[in-house]
Length: 153
Image (cartoon, rainbow, N blue to C red; front, side, top):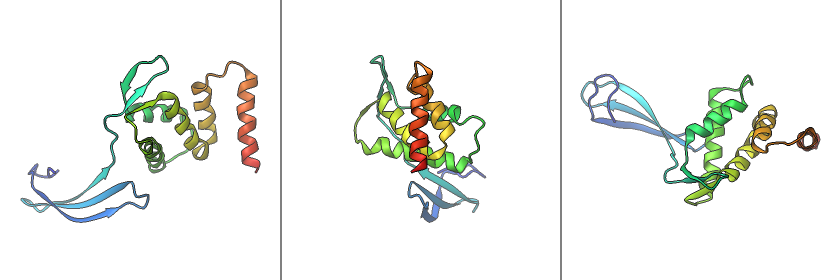
């Protein structure tokens, strides 16, 4: 890894720690040339996963598209960047658990909704309204009733 202070390419790892959620590793590093100390964070990246769209097209999985959709549903909602990052990691972990090279956009949507429901109910309803394409108020109301029913239990 390149030193951020002097751009030298030889750094050594002094310490490695797994995060509390077990999804990232933080490494303390030191530059062999200038002695500058810094941290790096490693996280899992999904590679070689194709998403099958509703119209049958295939496109590569994009973490950025997932984050963009989540941010859109969480617009003007209170959340921290750390909580958002954990949400994305949990969703990606569930995608990886399927151990497949292809996944449908519908399956990704269901995974996202499962996690959004516990993260922020308003964001969940926003996401569900776009994802499920409610045709009328009755289907939207049915989804809301299901959410409030589970909450009262």
